[in-house]
Image (tube, rainbow over all chains, first blue to last red; front, side, top):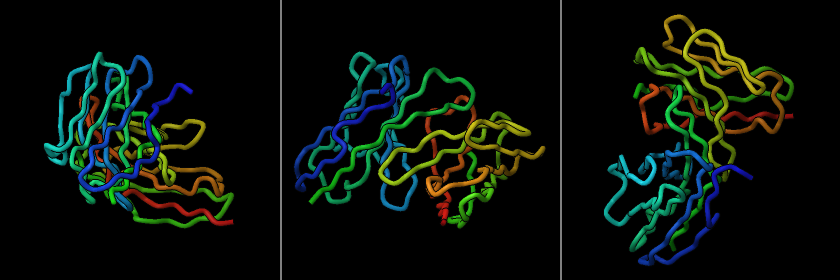
Length: 115
Length: 110
């Protein structure tokens, strides 16, 4: 399978714990995105990377959230001191260099439940 | 990014053609129109993209009138497996993020 891969698919944690998610984009896609989706809503943009550079962050990305993409390959999203409001599906997407209207390819997501 | 408006939900039956219309009155000259499909517990999946007139692929057709202030996603002969949420987005080829609305929940019944 050469699509976007996310790990884990599900994560249950207790409030106050730190969690880390991993995303492996489609190989040779130099752009990588993170989104958050809550029930009944469309995905909301969190941040994006071009290669290893983090070029844009949403206001949704509080200081408890940090994302990295070392070497411009896989990416990690860490949430520190999780809160119940962090419970959501976290989606990763990748795209090649902009051609046309920026078609993004999404992974299946990591569903986070904070108890 | 131009704001889009689409119906919250639609119902259909197997074998029918479904047309979902999206309004984007403030679309800019450089904006493309893109549709995604999302099943429960999965990420959105790209369906089709167009700039003007008509685009067709193996999954759907996209009709865009001359003024580009709306677009219609056409799904021919839907099946139960087409039950999903469909999102319409507009943006130019320089935009780095996607702004999703709530989408259209399509329910296909037997």
